[in-house]
Image (cartoon, rainbow, N blue to C red; front, side, top):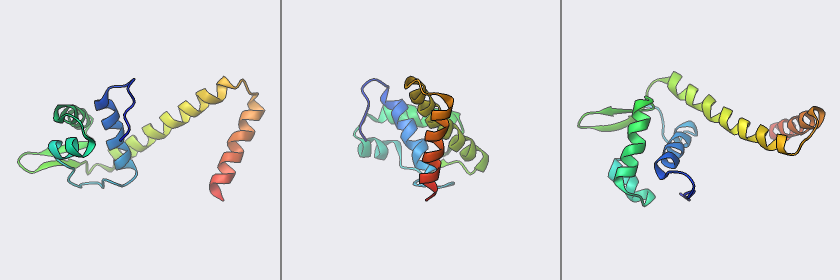
Length: 121
């Protein structure tokens, strides 16, 4: 992982875990790496991973089973909500960037249509 020095590492870990879940790298009901293992894999302090995992548990994205470990939620609705939230964030960032170019609505529509057309090919 390449960390952005302008944002807390735990937040970046949360975002990475969310991407892993949305992209299917970590499946629904799958046991996730322990705090120590993920900290070692990402070369960060275990406390940082614990903070990220705790927030993901509060959001019910990860579920803790005492004595067994942490798992990706089995709640399909939570994963769907997460997927939509991430898509919205990406689209919002894209629209903000488009606005900086001071394009007309017609020009923005044309760009979006071209992107959609290319993606569907």
